[in-house]
Image (cartoon, rainbow, N blue to C red; front, top):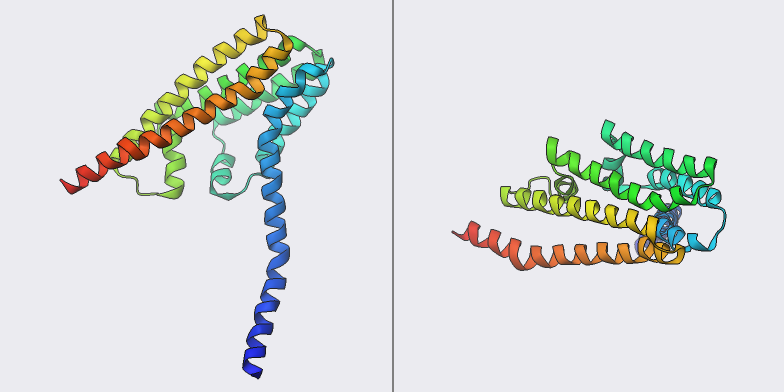
Length: 220
């Protein structure tokens, strides 16, 4: 019985010791989720505010808080910014600073198209110098990707580049010709629904086509 009590007490002590770390991890996870939702939510609500300068301040804060608060292998990878990555961050930082300085609604409206341009540059550069952006993410979970998977990640990266290009052009069109409310709705909600549809479509294609084809190749 003393041994049982001793083991029980030790387990309780470990639980108490782990509790602060667990709480910190949970708190950071909540912050990360909120920061990911903050940008589309801000754009979605921007049409209600008559002072673009305040929105520009929040865009600048969100941009750098997202990078600072990230954790895990993906965030660690993203922190190792290349020259092109720094160019994208600098572009968006300058854009948000320009909104603050000029209080320009047009610049604010063009910000989502600049986000798409930055993503196009970041993803497209990996197609030139390799490995592709999606391959980088895939190797975080599986460092030893087979050649078929590498080709698939290359094609998926190309699809994302096409999406960012088309979405960026259409976003600029909404900035120039749509009403405030319609611009906010598209860039703060509809565009992210389209991203979700593309993600789901890629997962379905992977499991219904890519993985069975790879399994047949291995069996042969």
